[in-house]
Image (cartoon, rainbow, N blue to C red; front, side, top):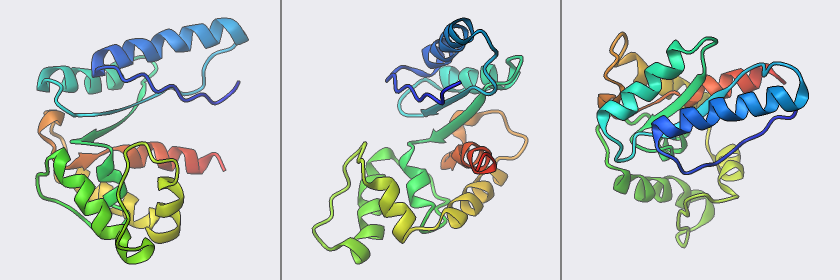
Length: 169
């Protein structure tokens, strides 16, 4: 079965619905079960209730849907490649911090662009995946056993998806 990535621009709840719809579609088309299903979404400005319910819905699905969420934005994952950030941040803070971390390597003219096709390469060359995973796990530990995910700021579970993908190598 192919590995597909679908960017939908949906809210958290409809993203889970769409993931389940795509799972059924692929299972029907390929006549075999989907091995693993993941959703990736940010806290953004979605209501706390919608965000928390989407995370819980993924966890409680049978089988569970992998849920790589970030609060407040996916860019936190990028930042954790360089440093541990454990203070509440607004999504407006991320761009400047990403630029501050990359400018020493790529020059003072560097401007972060959302959905940049070169970000992976920049992180791979100048950041540290090991640091990102360690830093993200440390952040998650700050909120251990709490299910008020919308209040876990900053926090990201992208490391769980990355570790699973690394196991496939």
